[in-house]
Image 1 (spheres, rainbow, N blue to C red):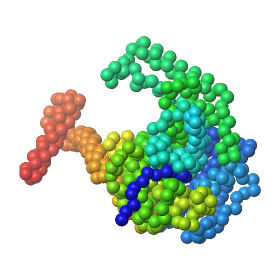
Image 2 (cartoon, helix red, strand yellow):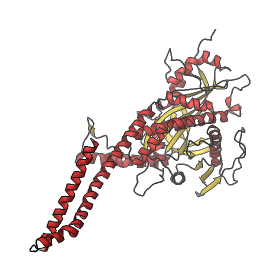
Image 3 (cartoon, rainbow, N blue to C red):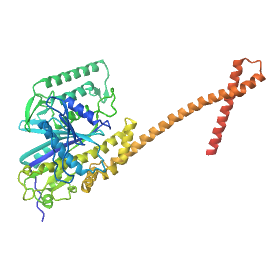
Image 4 (cartoon, rainbow, N blue to C red):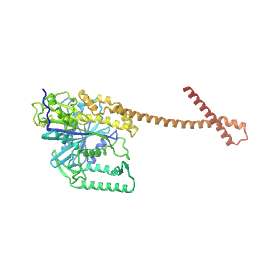
Length: 551
């Protein structure tokens, strides 16, 4: 007899709101990008996938740290000795990066190397505030050398039996929730504002989708830009608020222009836009030229990765979990608290009896089990952080491969250059092979393939490849046409040269002997005309013969 399904009462949860972003560049110079991010004040520490790190010391000078962890791949831990001069906040950032690197190396084998080199950095925190609630959110950046990046906003909270409806509305759907105040670092806001102000309001002066061009509209757009620029600088020049987050002081500012705006719509999606644009503007391509513009965001996809660590009545076996909370888990995956008959849960992608993994296009849900020996507070278990970061490493693994194919399909729809077209075709052509070799753990590979299918991304591969092939054929056809035109011009040039040589060697002496009374220029012109006529006649005869032969 199965237990009656009940609603969740959430106690402890960890969320990574992952935004996978595809830039419009496919080759990134990670070292120059890291220097640009450090110089702009966007980050303070950058850790590369080869375990080298660069950071700014207390004097603002660039320093390098070589991380050499001690421990074998399949051990449970690494031991790392930091330099004595390493700042405390840099050490904390590097510990986080090393923990994720540990799990990443267990996911992907050295032989395959399907994921290119990358860099990871902590971004300034965000504080979301309402009258009765203050949520600090910690963003992290992961940027790959092929122009794909992930910005994740980490939220860790403890609740007093938060109801399922409130949990779905306030945590799972955090991106839809309005906040009275959103506090973000001033440097990021300034970079984002200066990036958009030169082209701001261009698309807003229109009627029925048709843009209006005249002197008055240009003056209006110019005035709106000036007002926006003044608002930005005035807001950021005011004193910010000091927040003490994890024992470190942070000076943050409200979103420029949102002060005392009761109807202002502040969401975490706005933060995603600010952070993505600020980071993308500092990205340096390997083929960067002085007059090139900054890198832009081509597309992004986002979904939260939610780890339910503690909830009321948390069972110790999966059978009990599905019987008691199967419908609640399905509602979380649907992001809908009002469904009385939610759809059946998708298959559990975790074969072991420690937690469940369910996912679809909207959510990745990690539901933990609780054996009798586990403490009430999940953080009392020293392995909790390792489990959370293992889940996040797997979530980033999925997000990377998902956005890799999605961006290739977007490029194939309208390739901006031949190099990007070839990149898209190669990416789509080896997509199935890359997914199959993406992990040295069969469980992770199977889960990745299932999630890619559930997200609908694998269904785009065939059509995207056909689009890329069509553009390749079009470019090949145009190249053949240009080559054919060039061949015709070359044939005409060499035909004239041959006619001139034939006239000078044969027909000119013959005409001079036959008609000695002709002037020299007329004799030469007549010789050239006769030679040209004979060559054209020969070409026409060969063409007619080839045409008849081909038929």
